[in-house]
Amino acid sequence: MRVKGIRKLNKAISATLEPFEIEGATLSDEYSYDYESASVTYKITENTLEDIWFAEFIKERFDYDVRLPFVISMLHEVGHHKANDEIEGAILDFCLTEKKRIEEEMETADTERSKVLEWQYFNLPDEIMATQWAVNFAKQHPATIEKMWLAMRKAFYQFYRENGLEINIEGEV
Image 1: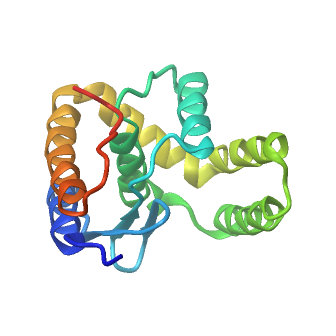
Image 2: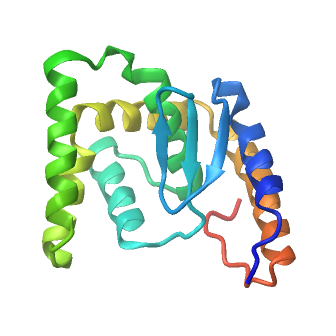
């Protein structure tokens, strides 16, 4: 099956991130931030175990209930852009080494161990800084994140309709 409307979806998601100086957004199978291009990737599946664990982590660590999981995940990637310039040297080396270890261990981990590894990942200094930025922004600008979600949700609905997919998007406003 050929997927239709990916460029249009990427353009719409990118437009919502322009105010944060993000150069573009590309549909992928994961959320990520690319430091060289100041761009992000995003996924359109929600309620994976990793998403659920991330929301639990945010609630426990930052006392914030994640109502809009996609927006928080995107703001987390923006947080890498906004907050992580301070990460370098030994701290950056530690983060990279730990991410490699976690990734390798995840390949054979059962669900219980996977949760422990995900939380280790979430607690890395660069990840904490990005999440803290995202949560602070969300707490200080609730109307802005709802507006972002409405624009993003509209783009998702159009993408899903064009591809004959069932629409089941979390985070109703």
